[in-house]
Image 1 (cartoon, helix red, strand yellow):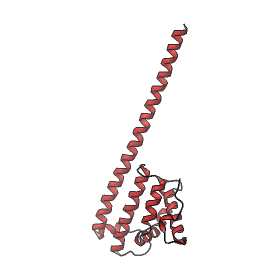
Image 2 (cartoon, helix red, strand yellow; image 1 turned 180 degrees about the horizontal axis):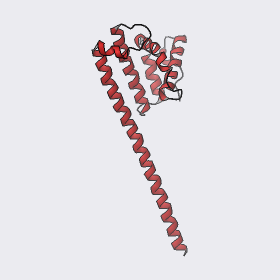
Image 3 (cartoon, helix red, strand yellow; image 1 turned 90 degrees about the vertical axis):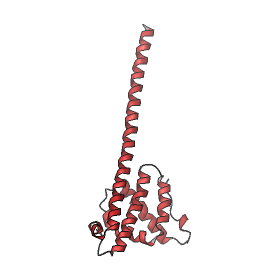
Image 4 (cartoon, helix red, strand yellow; image 1 turned 120 degrees about the horizontal axis):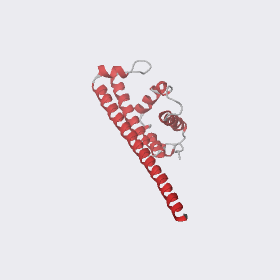
Length: 164
């Protein structure tokens, strides 16, 4: 009976292992599908922003800034938004680490138009869920803007503490 019991135990362990593998595969597939969904959303956003950048009448629909933004500036803001959301997507799907995103955005913040866009979109970011990825990254960028503004060096590439 010892051999039969050991065999039954092995079969039970094998069944549990197969179930764990199945669950892992399903989790992996759902993560892959999430990345695909994010990439598709990013592609759709780019198509919409491209149309808005080409047509001021369509761009007016996306003008949610305080006060009036001239059409040329608005197109620049739309492009800045596309650059930021592309960088955010790269982070969200794991193409870049948080530290790499930090470094990229630290460079992007050297552009005065992007800085102006970032400030103009502050009210929109205030409505994000506090624990959302976008809100956490937004706070990281806000801190980086502050650090860059307060830095006593012209060597912007060393300003701020990259996240671990």
